[in-house]
Image (cartoon, rainbow, N blue to C red):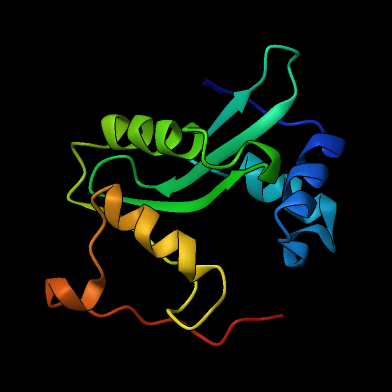
Length: 139
């Protein structure tokens, strides 16, 4: 695991591989968003191939938002996502809030993502007497 910038083609390939096409419609915008992250961690294979990434948006002191967590489908369920999240939890343990937003419970992806996040110690907002709000998603 390392803090790194990504080459255009490898960022595009990973986001496409996981089906996050909303990000790949404008690769320049994707690269700017990655560059604007508070922290970008990558996981790579022995050959240097990008296997996964996690990126945060944060003030570095009180709030950390886990913006993206991606693991290439061919290596999912191999501990890469867990290792990335554990490293982020360690680096941001001083923050009062460590948050993320993910698919709703009725989304196909939630079948695997929700149990994963719970196993990593995340608790749904409503279980903490909190609420989350946002403007409508721009597709």
